[in-house]
Length: 359
Image (cartoon, rainbow, N blue to C red; front, side, top):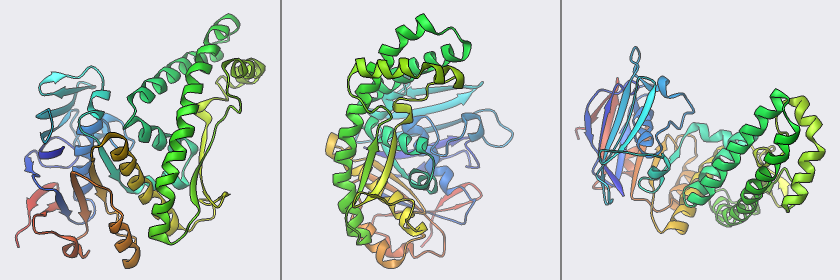
């Protein structure tokens, strides 16, 4: 699957127009703040109906506007067009003109893997951000996992409401077994997924950085594995949960860490090593997606080569995953010409205008 065109309206600073992107590799060249990342964000919106920048939908609209839209035509897909529009504080997803009932439908059509500066949060940020990455990673190829995650969050939300309002005994007796059942499903899948992910991620890091023994460690909040044992833990800690007004244990408190020969690595890693960890997380994610589905994703790479020395840059490019299409952003002074192929499309981006580069 690949994109043929992108049309935007009132999306960030982008000019309202349609851009032809019928190529396997597309380079977006321009100074910072001109709209390169906004272009990638619009493509991402058509894949997930949300931003990879973690902002509210209303913040995506052009300054002074309260609506926006992004639309792509597809190539190599059973579908022809995806339109995501936001107006009157409501978001609508249309697939070939038919409104999608669930954004999950997009995952089966148009998977994108984005590489961006915010990915550093998966390495050096909060536990929530790491959980978000690994949840997304599994959801790309396992829709049942996404359903279980949604069910768990729904029960968790109800439980937290009960804890805050103090109406707890009989309601919690009903909710706790449900939380245990859905939570244990998540834990089981997370443990297996992390093991498989490490089998891909560790060798990648060794190839690019020359450091072996790198792995991902999964540490569940619950240390037991039966519904009865989990329910007992929840009941034992109810007083603490009631005092806090929220559930203090469960998969929403699970932790992921990066280790080197079994010892925590990310806390001691240099900024460069953390940046490389973040990049290789995305490459491993793309590889796992292809292994599990037999399909290749679209790659959105936002200034990913900028902070790497020439040798690491060369090694990184040598381990790039398979892809149907890739979009790269570059500053004008970067040596992007050396990565260009004969059929690469090169666009300049200035003040939100995307124009074919004249050679």
